[in-house]
Length: 489
Image (cartoon, rainbow, N blue to C red; front, side, top):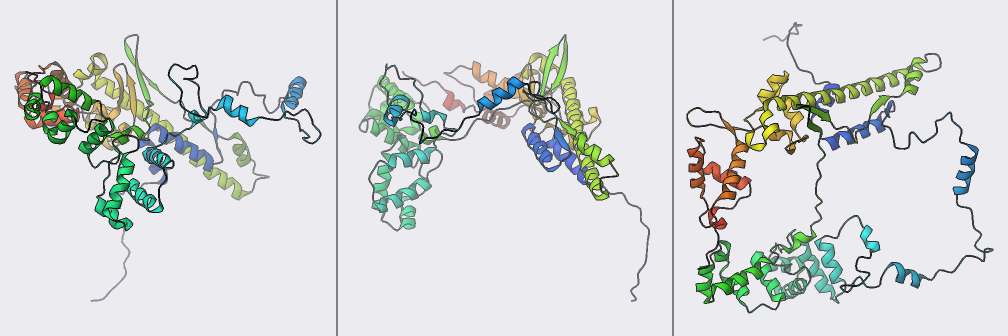
């Protein structure tokens, strides 16, 4: 068989993702904060891009062609700190650092109740980061005299604490890692458990509660007995069973339970360094004169423009080399495409929100209970775009409405069919209705998942028991046996 080379012509269609198109798609799915960071990065990398955002002092600052007034020049000169000759200047007072400490920073951070200095601030108040659990425990250990062996064991124990303050490793594992005996590890653990917060270093919630009760001198009491032997009855609020098992009155059991409720089952959570995430909506929908108006939020986003200086350099063909003009021209094209992509992104978001108002008009008027089933295809066909484009636009974008602030993905819900072919309901509306049913139920006889399913069936809504359980878990609602009001007689 002979091998030969041939030339053939072939027609084919192929989607080519240019760098500009990739950038436009990337900008479309970015959140508001990510977009601001991307624009700032582009300004730093592209010299022809300028931030045209007006500053607060732009109206007050003199222009480049304006000379400062004479009195202003004298004022600026007087604002500068003059040099001081320490050796020849005898008027500099000697600072008493002890008085400074007494006046501005009290030696003890403890203030008796009712004292005048109870609300006095400290220099520590300006710290930007609060101490976490490990730093708090290490701070307490710094005041305790420990040996090098204990320090090594404690370091291993601290490294195995989770965010709840619980020890996740077994004592045998820590002993094997450190090379010490289990008894030595146990002694170091007892030292750690004597620190604050009370209950830290426990292996589970039950042990944490027992440590806290011991700290309250309640080691031999009814609350300790309930936590140690009858925690399963406490979970179901079966106070009568606890009273029979402990041979105490129901009133005593209730009082003991109130003590247990005041304890912190996860003591380490109080020292969590997780900061709350605040949401800034990308779009605001307001009803003005009977019509909904879409307002895009551009606060915090730099306003881009192409530098006039580089435009003039590019047009000056006599004194500017050809290579320089070509470089500037490439940067100008990149800047123009970036500005165009950002504008296209804003227009697409506007179209999607406008379409959502059209489909979910009852929601904007009456609330979540009137949310209708909606899929990405409906909005994509309405604005004549692809579903993937709508998906990117609705990711990590938020809209502020008269009903509250929601993610754009919130408006897309699956449909729950009605019996007899009626109008379908959205899954979010079903969840809200489920929440209302549980809020109005009889606490002595809470509805089971099957009973709630039958209640929806009475309204011609097809909802299986497993679906009710799934929606209930999504809403953070406990099962009926945990919602039941405890019997005291």
